[in-house]
Image (cartoon, rainbow, N blue to C red):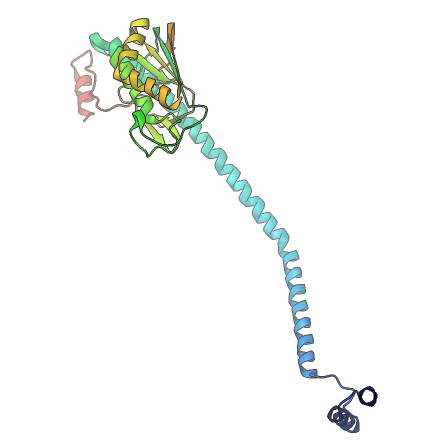
Amino acid sequence: MSLLTNVMDHSLDDGYAEASARRRADGTAGMPRRLRSKLGLAACLVLAALVVTLGAAQARVSAPVLAKEREELIDRIDGETKAADTLESQVDGLREDVGRRQRKALEKHGGDQGELVALLAGATPAQGPGVKLVVDDAREADAGGGGPRESSSFSDTGRVRDRDLQRVVNGLWQSGAEAIAINGQRLTALSAIRAAGDAILVDNRPLVPPYTVLAVGDGKPLGAAFRDSDDGQYLQALKDTFDIRTSMSVQEKVSLPVAPSLIVRTAQPYPAADTGSGAADAEKGTS
C-alpha cells in the first residue's frame, strides 16, 4: 500500500519535475513546443490557400474565353462535316451517272454480242426463271474444326464464311447460272467475295446474314445440277455437320439489279462515222 501511495503522490518523475521548474524559472514554460515548425506549417497553409484562390480566380476569368473557343471549334467541325457530306453526295451522283453512261455505251456499241457482254458485265438488269438459295448461320455455333472445312482456324464453325459463299457462287456458275446476286448485290466476272473480321464483303460492301443468293437460269435443271455438284455437296455437308441453315427453291421469275459500277480495264476510241479531220483529231487525242 505504501508503494501505491508513493506512486499516486509522486506521479511525475523527479527529472521531469526539475526540468519543469527550470522552465518556469526561465519564463519559457508557457511557450509551445517546436514553435518554428508550427509557424512553418501555418505559412505553408496560407500559401496553399493563396494558390488555390488565385487558380480559382484565373479559371473564372478564362472560362468564358475557353467556352467561346470550344463553340467556335464545334462550329468548324459541323461546317467541315457538312461540306464532306456534300462532296460525298456529289461523288455518289457522279459515280451513278458514269455507271449509267457506261452501261448505255456498252449496250449500244457492244457489237453482235452486246447483249451478252452487257449481261455478263452486270450492265443490264437480269430477269427470268431461276433459283433462290438462302444460307444462314447456325442457331448455336459449334466449337472446333475438321469436317468439310478441314481447318481448326475457324473460331466459330457455325458461322457462314466467305469461302462458303465463294463455293456456292462458283457452283451456281458451273451449274449454268446466267446471272447471280447476293443480298441484292449483283455479281460479275470481276466480283470479289472476301472477309473483314467476321463480316463478309462482296465488292467491298458488307453483307449481313441471312445470305440470299438469287440466280437466273433454267429453274429445276439449274437447282438439280447444283445439288449434284461438288459445291452443292459441300453446302449439304455444312448443313449436316455444323447445322448451317440452307434452303433452295425454284422461282418462276427472278429479278436482279444492275451492278453498282463497272470497272474499265482497257478502252479504245470508237471509230467515227466520217474519215475527215474529226476522226484524225479524235485519234490524236487518245493514247
